Amino acid sequence: MKSPRWFVREDLDGFFGLAINNLVQILVIVSLCQGVLQFSNNLIYGTILPSIALSLIVGNFYYSWLAYQQGKKENRDDFTAIPYGINTISLFAYVFLVMLPVKLDGLGKGMSPESASELAWQAGVVACFGSGIIELLGAFIVDKLKDLTPRAALLSTLSGIALSFISLGFFLRTYAHPLVGIVPFGVILLTYFGEVKFKIPVINLEIPGGLLAIFLGTVLAWLTGLNTWDTNQLSTALEPVSLHLPRFTIGALWQEKEVLISYFSIILPMGLVNVVGSLQNLESAEAAGDKYPSIPCMVVDGVGTIVAAIFGSCFPTTIYIGHPGWKEMGARVGYSWLNAVIMAFLCVSGTVGLLSFLVPIDSGMAIVLWIGIVIVVQSFNSTPKFHAPAVVIGMLPGIAGWGALIAKNALRAAGLGTPDMPFLPDILIPAFEGSDLYITGAFALEQGLIFSAMILSAMTVHIIEKDFGKAGLWALSGCFLSWLGLLHSFKWTIADTVLDLGWGKGGSFALSYLFLALLLFWAQFNSGVGRENLEKK
Image (tube, one colour):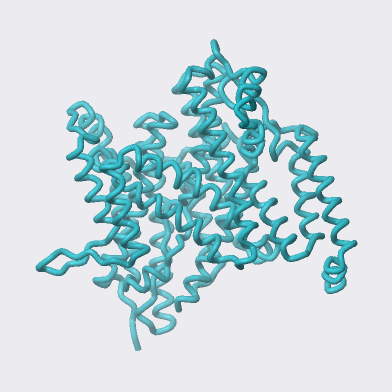
């Protein structure tokens, strides 16, 4: 008879791995909210971070308790809790594909920066809530979703966002500050790909690679002058240090409820991807020897995100990939609840600001860069080799969307995108195309990029498998979504291009997808393989 324990020594190693991951993401959230979205400190430290703390407590405490109960049930002391935390993909997707467009649209309409930021936060809260509802309901239909959507279509959708919005941005930043960024990047590569163990001489104490990367990056940032001691900045970082308890922000959900419609093409696929990804992670845990009930786990996954939104967070939470790694490390139950306690303390005490002052984001960005790389690699490793073309095609809309964002940011940096100097498509489009850059294609792929990634990738999978009829059905879905304006259709504003919803708004794209569907159906009925597949059905 073996009885599980709430904490073992190896839980410390697991804690550092999970906590560093969550900490880097919290620092990224603070950095993006301050730098990109220009949220006020009161909004970040008084509302968003306390709600993140609550959502981390909900999930980590539950999964710790569940691991303990499963251990008692099976008379085992080696159950490892399911890792849980902030959803990396949704973090970037909602910042760059929901909140930033809403903020820029508000500025383009003449709103003050403060009002536009408030509007963007409300949009993020609604998107987070919608994602949580989809995750909650998806717990009961996830098996059907997996049957309908090829794995390559789901994973390549993540890969496009991971490669562009996560990896490329931080990769550029690494080489913008090479003296600070490259060495931590090397430590991460050695740790997670080279399986190198770093130990302190004499006492022979192993140092987690992520912790070492952050330590070295921080030291290099201060030594090279990337970080400098500024009394005013220190005072600003100390201002939020006090107790910030979570508070209801249900009003924000109601005020911006139309976001669920306007950004449906982002919210729905992200929610579905989270559902299937969580189930895949549960399957991964079972393969490692720890079987958990899927429906309760996934319900709590959705509840954690809903709780986050109700209390003001824009960032969904989810079951993490990597359970087998933590299990092999020796972590059991304690690493999960300890992560919740420490992360919650940092969030509700306001000390994250002080930490971000002392520990620059450049010191930890190698970990996020690694996460992006792993997501892309998983898309190829977890799908059949002959589906590789579908994975690549599914990545292209994400890359195009990132390119569109960069192009528009460049125009704004050049002084365009103001009421006095708005974007003028009649001038900009010929200028771009004159340099062989068909920018309107990037703007079209940017709108509903997650839908288009799934559709294109799924079509390619079925074409590779000679199941042209199913590929035609996916093309018809593109036709339907385009006709409603949920896919590819865009309109110009003063400082942005945004989704143009409405009946028949994407008529040219809908017609193109319809012709493509007819071509695929023709292939189904006129090729020998196509008829054979049909007869088998």
